[in-house]
Length: 441
Image 1 (cartoon, rainbow, N blue to C red):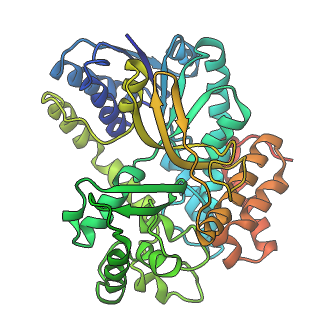
Image 2: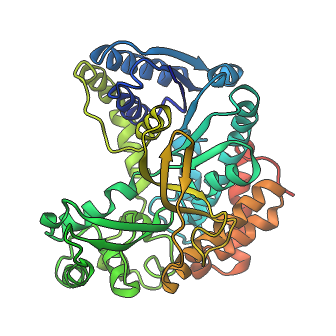
């Protein structure tokens, strides 16, 4: 029987999905699930949802809840797997700060959870909490795998992999849905069965490097033709930024266009406001989602408890498959975020956290060697890796200058604001966060 601890279990929609997946597995259905959160209301709600889900399946699992930092170590004690889905600071106040302070300086964002100034600040307030997790895990479950779902993925996973002893993999569902989303949108669904593909790069900017049909035919020439047609003729498409990536760089990437619009120099420019409409970019998208979720949560929670009475189908999230693979020693392949040790991707730095194919078996998670990315894809990744590494450096050293440098080198921030303004904005963000951040000197 495995013990699976869920950190940030109050993320009820996601925790229910992942834990339901585990209950769908014969090898995991009698596991112990430890649900940890610091919000008593959300923890109680998710406990009701997971208990109902358990009863709808075999009812064999043991569900325990742990509230507050004082109970965190007990939640982790003896865990075989730890799933992390925390959000430090929540929508109010921290997401509001991440969007509203930069907006005063003319800097607009869409999601702000992975890169950009919003991603930097989210990492800086989350890394200290994850460092506490690592300290507890080293003491009470030193052999556990940490499956990290929290963004900014590469910064948080990279920190854990470089500066703690915890075995960590970063997981994002954008890899397993990447080619299906692309092919469906381009009307090429008939080519999906039996396809062979290679995806590698960094989180939210992994590249679909190769895709062939079941007979080995290269699908990219037709993909490129149809993507160009979309750019020219489908102005309502939600994926125009990624199609433009195909046009400009030759390859499709894993994460959505509203995300990728803010990872570069090209699309969010106050001197070219027409680009927002041209590429159908939803500014302030994440705050809108948060507000809708908060408004609808009570009804959604009741509906989730009602729906839990019906056994759920297993989703395509990796967590349960990884746990099952390790527990049963059954090989399984994932796309995971791992340290670029040994230069898995040869033209990216060794201390970068990269997203590559990984083999999972009873011995753990084993990242696969990919080799060189196309030089333009590696160059795009490096603009993001620069920010990731400097943000981690700031979190480790507590030096404010590294936060400034991360913001200066961020593609979107650096292309919109002068250096003095960037420094002033960072200072304002640090002040606005108050005790949500450690002290920087």
